[in-house]
Image 1 (cartoon, chains in turn cyan, blue):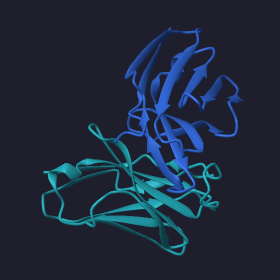
Image 2: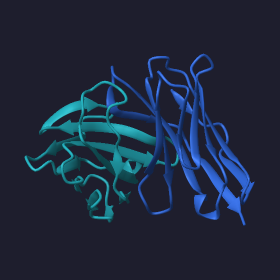
Image 3: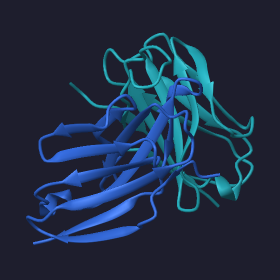
Image 4: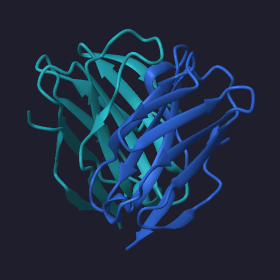
Length: 117
Length: 114
């Protein structure tokens, strides 16, 4: 079974631009979560989509948004890029079992390395 | 505020010996804990998990221990192999903020010396 794929793998943008990252989950997985990894803050949860609806959201500004399509593929958008948005953006998919802890294991893609100049 | 902490940024172990990676958490509402390992240029790979109703879970060479009263968990790798060299992340979740809202520690870099 194919794993989680993310495109593009590397991206360079300038301040003020916007960017869209894409994630294709493992076949059969309905939940897609996005994380940001930076050297200073580590891995931080951005949001989760399940059945085309945002189910959970982390503490990031509104410039970070996402969506999920009917085939469970997800996109993440960052508008008005800032230097501090430079990071590795990771997507994780899971079956999307109930919201109770312990029912769902997430599998991560390789990430998209975003550099903002 | 870091709710999951890995206080050892690095650990070196001889091949064949036991590796013990530690993790502490502050949020008593966490009910599920996971360990991931990460190689450079790859995403984290799921290793093993444990529910808060258990105190031990074993999978081959990997065992996770949970001490809820101390808010502490550890990952034991026995015997350690050079291929285990990677960064290990501890993560936790709870039903309130969502099973897929994982809170991660900052990672411990394990080096297994042949």
